[in-house]
Amino acid sequence: MTQNLTTIGFDADDTLWENEHFYKMTQERFADLLQDFVDGGDLEARLLEAERRNLGQYGFGIKGFVLSMIETAIEVSEERVPAAVISQLIAAGQEMLRHPIELLPQAEEAVKEISENHRVLLITKGDLLDQERKLAQSGLGELFDGVEIVSAKTSGVYRTIFDRHGDGADRAMMVGNSMASDVRPALEAGGWGVFVPHNLTWAVEHAEPPEGHESYHGRYHEIGDLSALGEIVTQIG
Image (cartoon, rainbow, N blue to C red):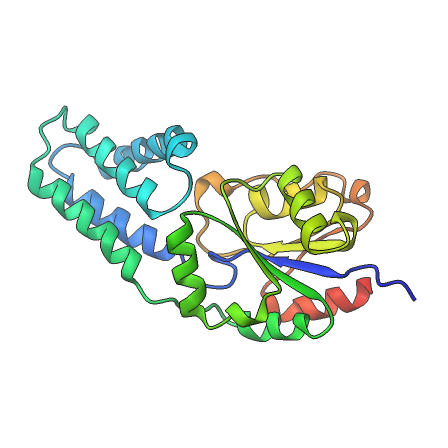
């Protein structure tokens, strides 16, 4: 009997372990440091604007985030920001890079369960060294049949990865907390997409759920947490 689903890809940040929480904490520190120059709400908007603008140059991850904070600090202060503030922003980024991994509930159990009968892949964006560090500290590394750290998650990228590690996108599933990066591109590639919402998701990763689920032939699913993933995989067969 042919297996409909052979390969499962897992996102990393805010799907298997906490990530955005630490960005939010650093942004609060950023607002405190810049409170003499700009209102907190405006600062957040200016930072997001800089992050979007810089993605093409810096990519995803903490280093690009810190550079965007520094750039924003210089802009909103009209180049009057003290060197001591810049130093503290750099220190905050270094602290983020050292922070221990905090696995999300059911993450380890879900990956172990799925790995018993399927190829499992870790497919994540971000800085290579930081993502490798997180994976090593997570204790999940040996469970994955392949790890892909990419600069962007597009339908073409998913097709390439699922061709390389599996039997093609039409027999693969992507699981993650980002509608924009994990779910919609995987569906567009011809695979399944499972959305696992996180209470904190970066604005850049927001997107509308796929319209007309019928167009994806039942390939889109949403679950409250990873404990429900095994049942969906079993149903697909």
